[in-house]
Length: 332
Image (tube, rainbow, N blue to C red; front, top):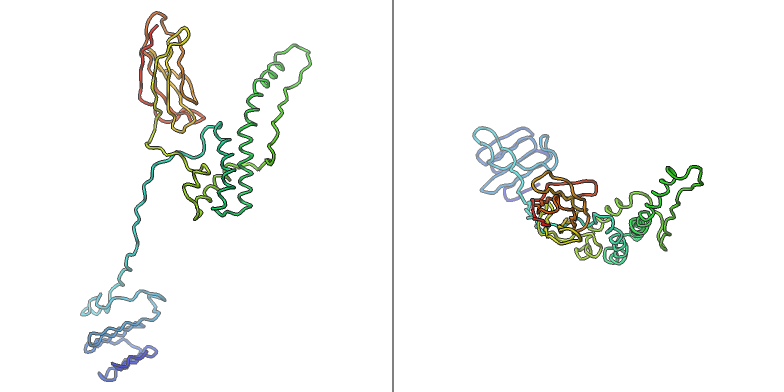
């Protein structure tokens, strides 16, 4: 490197400054007149209020080491420079956009799932014109959704309808006429719809993973999410417990209590009740509102106070806290 105005030449760790009669070889030199510092492989020249900074790969810093600041150390103490300055903080702080809480997009109850699977399969084919997902992947996921629609819909309904016949068949086997001929009831599954085929296990997990892929696409929008049914309904408030209302209605031969409740996307509710301050008892598990309490009065000729409290039901059992208690008077 050659700087002509001040006639400075730096070649292979050697500095020659002709005008000021300073020559430095490969050792360590500190001269105050022209403020030239050479230490190891780092050189700083400051002359006539002009600074020239030069660095090579050094034993302590390595390639790409941060250049120490001139004057950061104590000159008089013999420390030629202090620690390097920290890099500027260019990090931009992004405020998270708060959006309204949404309920899960996948139906909690089995009876609503066939419709979801069918819509997802149909709309995914249409939406892929915008999403641009691999055609083979879309075909595979549509096949998963179509078979799940069949299994959770017409097949499951047929199985449930077959349940009483199966129970009767077992009763006949165990308790029927001794020696009478017997055959087990035979369940015939409904035929697969045209274009629907059996798929491997884990179909729902594959669909959920594919939904994540869909949402990561640059062309994905919330409108597409709503079209596919992969965006849950907006939930304006947290609902840790069910809410419900009570109404006394006259039924045949009794005064009944109508319990209208909201389950906020859960499978159902567990209803507990007590009468005239007695012990609490589980009255029912109900998957759809309303529930009608048709119990006869404890004393046919005397009114009674009925109290109610509800919990969420998740398909396996009660979950969460009890709701606040409400009461109503039922008279003969």
